[in-house]
Length: 295
Image (tube, rainbow, N blue to C red):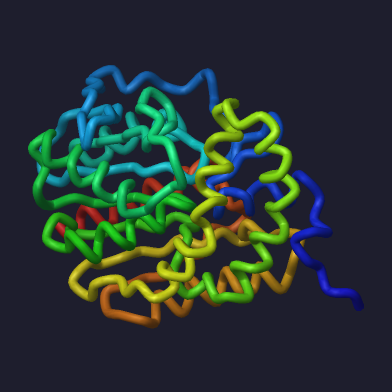
């Protein structure tokens, strides 16, 4: 039997995998579309935060107790969470924050290769300027798992827990897996370079330019034992068309959970990589559990 490789996947199957690189292809976003009928949080207020000369959009629904920060996957902005925000606020009473990473949504573009350190600095600066210094529950989907890991390592005292939703985790990014992802993405990157000013192409190029070095380093980063984490892994994984890579994704999640205390593994049954869209009930439940357990 021939082994499936990234190059052999269909576009529909491959598109979620591009979320690992924070890429978008064609008219399909990395992690799925938005629902135009989404509920309006009502109480949310937008703030433009300056960090190092560029501005970032943070959207705050005020509450009490914990602060829940929702961080989207590659290619998605804060609107990805707009269905979940009102339900989460109603269920927990907590402050809920969404934000647009640099180059996405209403946030400024930052030229050059994507740097996870800059993304962490943007998030930390935004929270601090909003007066948030502790008791944060960080909810991170897909590529945002990379941001979450570095954020937790550098700022464990700010976090009371994290929910990592089918997120990028260090154990996945072996040299072999990085090479497979790069090989798959190369045709899209080459095409994007022909029209580099297009926003999606700019996002793809900036991430691809730093992907190998960034993820080699990410593979060695340890999550701090002091920060509890729930890992939600999708049943289908981003690699539904490649059983080998799908198993590596599941193994990486299991390895991460075994790697420290206060970590829980949850499988999102009947879900693609797009867990917040396919299983919002499960995401809501696990965030509620984290808020209740680690107040």
